[in-house]
Amino acid sequence: MRFDLKRSLFVSLAALGFIAAAGTVNAQTASAKTYAHVISNEKMTTLPQNRNVNFTGSNALYNKAGTLKGAKVVASRTTLNKIKNSQSSTNNVRAYQVAVTNRGSVYYKVVTYDGAYRGWIYGGKSVASIAGGVTQYTTFKNQGLSTLTAAQQSATYKIANPGTANNGTTVTYKQPAWTQYKVGRAITDSTPYASSIFKIDQVGTRTRENDQWVHIYDVNNANSPANGWILMSGLTQAQAPVADNAIQINLVDPSNNSTIVKSVTITRSGATKGINFGYYSNGGWTISQSDLASI
Image (tube, rainbow, N blue to C red; front, side, top):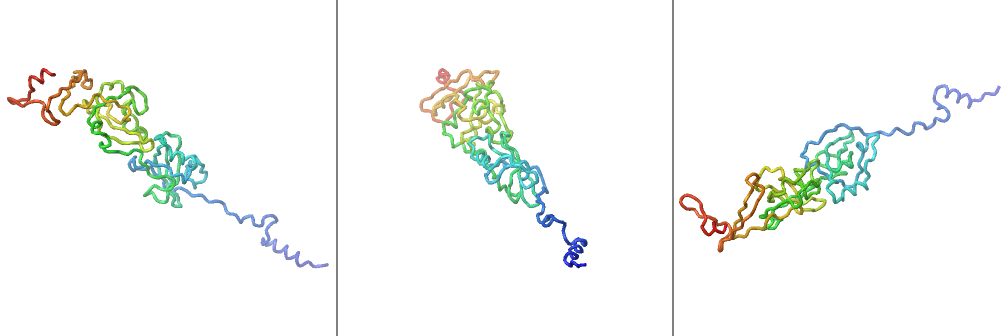
């Protein structure tokens, strides 16, 4: 009988497990994909206005941290670039949650002010500063009163079109509309304040629209619910500025000092701004008979 050394050696090695079964060679050369996992996830506690952000367009928005298993795109970079360049403050963005993965990546959970987009976006490698797909953003730029003319600063105003419209010109707001997340109107109906007289004590512009907002206060009621922010275009001058050589006397409704029944302007020839209109006599102030006659 012929002895087949080659066959015999193959059988022996197979019996010892050194020869793999047919079709299994190289089956284990590829390893399974590994995913990151979250090691911390906290609500942000910094001041709300310091958590206003804008998208940079360099990263997409996901339903969870982008490197986690099952992460899906909520908004593409193209979409976020459109939001980034939007001229509507409804597209302002607030960050409110921060997570860190085992790979040292930081992710922020953000939401647009109108609620259209909410999700997680890459934020760099340190929680000390916002980076990556978002950047800190100023939604409103405060300006000095010097932005207004001297006449505008000294003038008094009424709401031009009292009503209930939520359009920036009809009612007042706790902050200029859509500049702080979920901070809305001061009043929802300005009709009861149609006769109220206001002055301006703050001014600024919204970053996206570049429109001018002013903070107004009731000159006769420091605690008026209507005190708040409104578009400058929503005001009308209550009365012409008083000349430097005159005084204005407002006759008001005794049951509501905000309601001016009639205004009387008295001019005195040769008078200048800052001098007393009346005269101190016999321990009290009085005015001349001619001024009394004019009034």
